Length: 139
Image 1 (tube, rainbow, N blue to C red):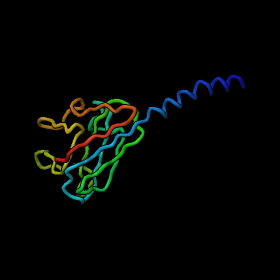
Image 2 (cartoon, rainbow, N blue to C red):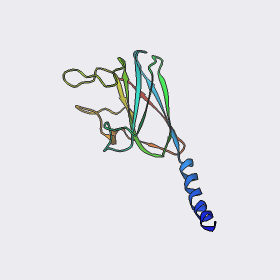
Image 3 (cartoon, rainbow, N blue to C red):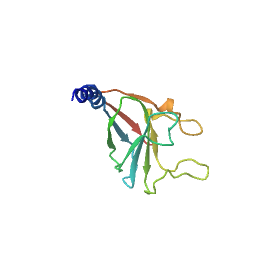
Image 4 (tube, rainbow, N blue to C red):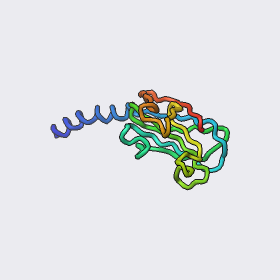
């Protein structure tokens, strides 16, 4: 009984710490040219996974008056995201023969790359414990 009480006393603060450190990321998406299809937001937490494997993401119906999406309960830290307007709902970023995207997109910080996507460092931002609201414009 004594060891069970000790275990509970040790674990309880860790659980409370985990619950207290969850933050919400709110993304305001502007310049949506069509209400057809979906907007996809992929969130990344490292340069190793950036544009390869999102930590989490969300899909929502596109709307020409803009869209706000909330990704809940992320641990505070550094993140980057990409927004894609999948107008034809085929689940991928369509590109022309040269590899240039034909569907609208945006990166956090409205970052732009040269001859390709921006780096994680160019797109990263800090998510504090209190959460953050960021605004991006599709292009």
